[in-house]
Image (cartoon, rainbow, N blue to C red):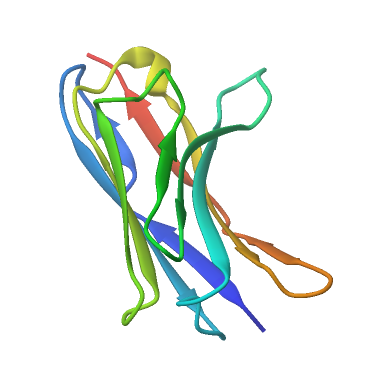
Length: 119
């Protein structure tokens, strides 16, 4: 059974930084996978924040480009999200997501970690 566990959320002042981590257990994700961080703010739909493929290609939402960096360690089955210059509008529950490109594809989610940006 594949499980994703996020950590690193918390309360931070505007302009501050946080680093989120996601540990994937139960299966390797070194090949044929895409890993992503999503977020969901109160009253809003869940949105993709950052994506990284097994080959290391990344993509970011326009709202976080230049501030957030996604990275993965295939040997440790972890994916991190470094968040800098945080803004109040970054406040949300952040979720880790893994897609295994099998047939059919398998999709897994973590339980989420709260990030609050407030003075």
